[in-house]
Image (cartoon, rainbow, N blue to C red; front, top):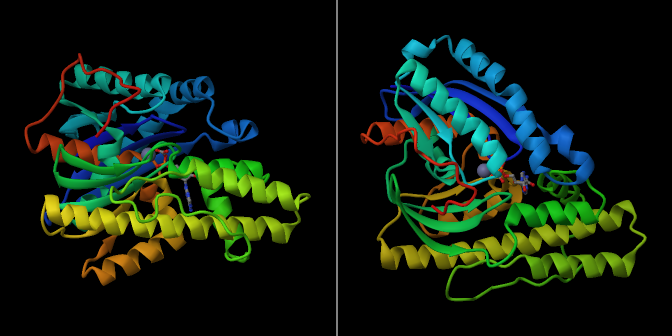
Length: 340
Ligand code: KG4
Ligand code: ZN
């Protein structure tokens, strides 16, 4: 089974071809990503209109490149998948309309994929893990703990009540004068910083429901930064290290509660999974790996290039749906909001 996947929900235009391997995992035949970061960095965040135009400019070429890099043509495909949301609606429309057009012309099934489902199923593409598993999903737009029981069967155990975790990293970077996207920058700075210098809160620690809250932490960091301003390089490094340490504590505590809830509501998880752009963070991965070990579980986290937005995860979600007989028709809507 061979599926083309298109991803255009945020600031990455991506096209990939994935096939279903004999061992049940995915085989990534091509994975083309065009990052728009350079076009947005001057604004310190993603500008929706710029994003939509940039997607429209490159999607055709990128699709052709993904097919030729995979050494396949349209006639070899079994389906055409696109992320139909959630995301910036102009961008979503570019990818979904392209996929609909290709599906119509080639007479192949269309699969309208939830972008979050793409992140959620990636560990099955890379590691072939079985259901059910506990997913910690954190990106620029989402922060959730989800019990993944099957394709399309998601039980949200906890979520953020304010900012998304990636968004918090991005805002902290911005207020410290670091470029967008902030997550990797904050992580790099934190490596040389003292995580104990600034006492920052650990919001939600100990709460019974595994929800997250990040805006108070960000505000506390801003107040500390204002107190010591003007900031020198060591201050920035210490602020980043202190922020990241607080986030790590929150992630571990919330995920521990999520595991407890999972066991009560679903049973024994096959693994703890980390996905989404924030899952690229080494400190978070190491902490989650320790937590998983204590719980007698394995941490499965995709390789860095599959943590951020990509076409392979959309193609793979397309394969997972298609092999269950699930596909969509031309009325599939583009959705700005689409909870898992
Ligand atoms: O999944 P993703 O590529 O796009 C969305 O769907 O949002 O996630 C992007 C987010 C950004 O907020 C970025 O700052 C964050 O993931 N991120 C990180 C790291 N790498 C990317 N956050 C913390 N540490 C990182 N190393
Ligand atoms: Zn994403």
